[in-house]
Length: 197
Image 1 (spheres, rainbow, N blue to C red):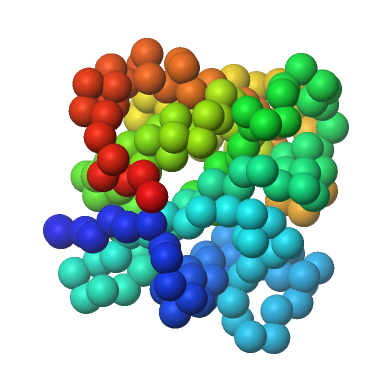
Image 2 (image 1 turned 90 degrees about the vertical axis):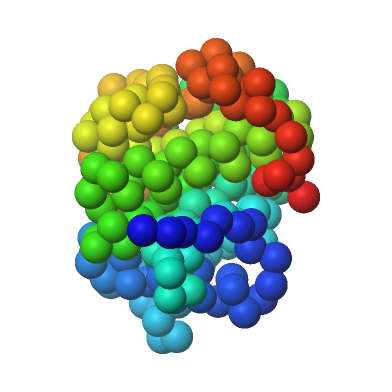
């Protein structure tokens, strides 16, 4: 399977990302949509204007995976706004959040998920490094934390598991950019501007 990976730079592609995210929410988080009815069948929120978006396209040019990276957000970050933990130790100008890490159901298998997550990891590392981001929030389920560790994306939990405001039981987590590089030395060796805009 051949995928195309790119940073979203056009409004048309961003609308396709929102439509894809809506599809995933219908499948995985229907209660969220009940609390946040979206008449246009596109999932977007108040953090999207402060995010860069990364997308995988399948051979037919259809969106099959997404991730967004929120940074420099004047309204805070989803994890700190929707969960309870001590966020005082993180410098605001070195902080971001990765979220909406979604893969289409038909590509959720060992082979294709690994391909997609390798590219997500590259993009996120280069973007975080370029922006001077040292730590990245995530509100993650226990099983997803384990899965990310397999792909050498090692989030650290900040508190015990708790009820997320909208998405069920989650851990507020932090990912350290430096540790991501240590765990994936090839990212440092191959540091170029391929993914950095």
